[in-house]
Picture (cartoon, rainbow, N blue to C red):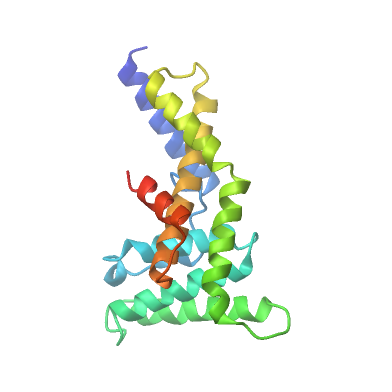
Length: 197
C-alpha cells in the first residue's frame, strides 16, 4: 500500500471515529453550548474554544467552568452589545441559562469573584501537573527530532490527540487568564509563548 493510501485510510478512520464518538479532532466532545456559537460571533474564535474547555472541565472544577462561561458571555456582549446579529440573542440567553445552572448547582454561599483569577491560576497549575505537561512536551520534541514514527499508528495517534487536547486546553486557560488579569506569573507567560509556536 502506498504512503498516500495509508494516509487516506488514516484520515477516513479518524473521521469515522469522530462521527461515532462525537468528539472533535482534539478528542473533545462536540456538543453543549460550544457547538452553538452563532456565525455573527464567529469572528472571535475564542468564544467557541472557551466554551469547549468549560464543557470539558465541568466535572473537574465547576467553578472554573463557570468563570470560563462568564468570560465567554462577556466576550459575546462586547462583540454584539445589542444582540443584533442573527442568533446572538438566543445564544446569549442560552449561555446565561447555563451560567445560572452552574450557579444553582453550587453549594450554598456567595461567589467571591475577586478570587476568580486566583482560582483560574490554581486550576491552570493543577491541570499542567495532572496531565504531566513537561513529559508531553519532551515526548513531542523527541518525536519531532527523531522524525521516526511508531509502527503502532493507533498508539501514536492516541498520544498525539491527547497532547493536542491538553495543549489546546492550556492555551485557552492561559488566554483567559491573560484577559482577566493584569499581572500574570512568569510561568504562565512562558507557557503562553510556548503554545503560540
